[in-house]
Length: 254
Image 1 (tube, rainbow, N blue to C red):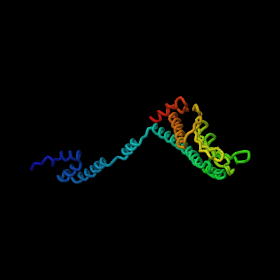
Image 2 (spheres, rainbow, N blue to C red):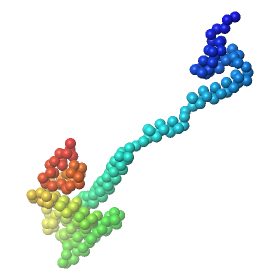
Image 3 (cartoon, helix red, strand yellow):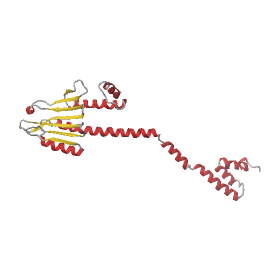
Image 4 (spheres, rainbow, N blue to C red):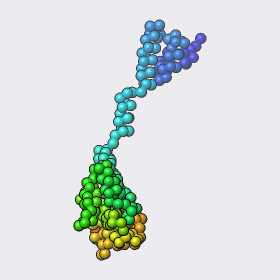
């Protein structure tokens, strides 16, 4: 009986090379080669065939390395951005802390006596590692308290005798820097007038301007900070001046 093509030796060998499982079945089914040869082909072929299916560890490592490779410039940029962000956050938190301290005491003008303010200001300064300077009220001097983060960044508290001759909080001033500050005060006798709010910027034609409340003071400070931040970004850390503030604000908003 004539062999079919898939029973012939050449076809079995071809299948063993191209499609090993098919060739293996044909070899055993058609009893090609003697028993030791079939066993040897089965073991060797199975080993080679399985090795091609299993993933190559070095190849996997190369793929992982390729996917996780980061350019040195990217790393440097990320580090620089993180450091700048941390610096800005730290500065903002510190400034906000002093500003909150200012706003708290503005609400106590005309009512907070010197002794109580001194105790709370001392506790606040100790908690934040700020310096505090106190001038005790006397017949010759009015009481004052200064809580400072730096020589230029501080809150000043001034006192004036009320109708019972008790030194009471009358002035609160927040200095952002030597050129910029906000303040609230009522220095009239017996505290019968309204509190006056003002902003100060030495780069303005009229450095001191009155405003209606603390909301306008905060808006004033935000504008100052916005101008400084954006000008640092576009002018290589140069200081904003009255000539370029408009450009700075425009760039920031854009």
